[in-house]
Amino acid sequence: MPEMTNDARDPLAVAELRGVHKRYRKAIALRGVDLQLRPGELVALLGPNGAGKTTAVGILLGQRRPDAGSARLFGRDPTLPAARRSVGVTPQEVGFPDNLTVAEVVDLVRVHYPYPAATSELLERFGLAEMAGRRAGGLSGGEQRRLAVALAFAGRPQAVVMDEPTSGLDVEARHRLWEVVRAFVADGGAVLLTTHYLEEAQALASRVVVIAGGELIAHGSVEEIVARVGLSRVHLRAPALPDVPAVIRVEVNDGSYTLYTADPDELVRALSLQGVAFTGLQVERASLEEAFLSLTGGAS
Amino acid sequence: MKIVLAHGKTQTLQHLRAPGYLLPTLAMPGLFYFLFEGQDQDVGLVTHLMASYAMWAILGVAFFQFGVGIAEERTTAWERFLRTLPLSAGQRLGGRVLSAATFAAAAAAVVIVEAHLINPVSVAADRWLPWSLALLTGGVVVALGGIAMGYWVSRRAATALAMLAWLLLAYLGGLWALPAELPGWTEAVSPYLPTRLWAEVTWAAVLGQPSALGDWLGLLAYAVGFAVLALWGYRRDEGTSYR
Image (cartoon, rainbow over all chains, first blue to last red; front, side, top):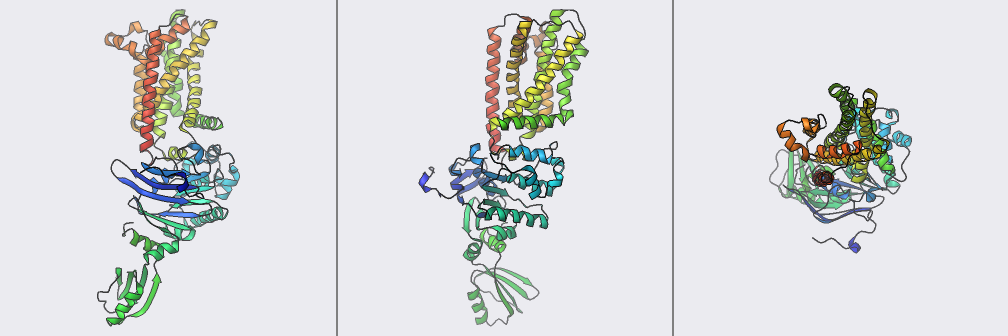
């Protein structure tokens, strides 16, 4: 596939993938993925393990080259170090040298940026102030994760890419991080986030992009993603249930049924026509997690 | 440049805080010089051996800081994170070179100062500069060898291989004994080894003798070979260590 010409690019995008293909020796990781990240939005990249999320992020950050298609960071080739000057990164796998202090790690990272945040301010913001003198490699998992997030903001970035930033964080630390991320986005920052916590995407995302099997299978606002799959959850109690149309999944618990369907109206009409004596009918829109399950065929 | 200096400083600090890693390469050459060569009155011989042990000291730093250092770090999460910073591979390597050069100079200085204290070594005033240049040239060649090792050898094998290569190349290159004292087959192999080529030009420089063009060309060939291997290994690593 030839590289797209410049005018095909999104002029607002701070980070962009266009028609990106990537294959490894044994498997195809990405087949024609498009992704745009604009200022002031948080895009949540969702998908089951092995969907290609980390490969997509790696290509966007210049860690790998696409086999076909193009990647752009602030209009430049992300494999050029200068293209990464306005981007902060929190990798999925976090680790620090045993023999450097937290403050030394922060100082080393700050050196790479023209206008870095002050070390003390950064440590304060992420609740690491009292750990400045401790060995970075000796921090607990949650503390290391917080330090990794703090480092993403060390260079006063315009865009931040976070690969599973809150895995291993307790609820309080997670919510504290959400506040920092919300403030950053409200200030015009752009965030690309991969996460397993759908609650996190629902809480933060302006847009959701779903990848499965190396392909982008859905994208839109959180509401649109749910609306597009049109998945509703119908609760009812009934002595028995006949075969009804348009039901994707059924959960039964002691006479209490939960039916997942794309068309709740049709389902309820069918139940009435067949004379099912149901009680306690409730129809709810499915959560993002359930929408996500149906989009990826339940393979999460 | 600021970035290179920061990485050099950080690496130096990390090595100073992990003395178990540092001590052998800094102390062993000086110690071996004292134990195995001891005191002698032959000015030419003790000067020759001082030059040899200084090379061995630099060789150790090159193999351990580049070979073992790169092999151990390149698969770590920290190193992968550094690659996402606006940092070029050249700047990262530059920092490593700064740190290694500091320790190599220190390790060689230990031998040189010690030799001056215990033996009647004599280096003519106008030989110090050629000697330093010869040490530096060979240092660059073996550093390239170390970098190649770092990218091709797994972290588990790196320490053992670096130690083995350090000792074997010193012995076979004639850094411990005089080349003439090397037994049988080793004498046949020795002239083609990078350490021996390096030693020949260094001995010539320190003792004020003419050096052979062939030795310089041999060193150049090793430099090119190691550089190609290092670059190839780096590219290979770039493709595999980020998943």
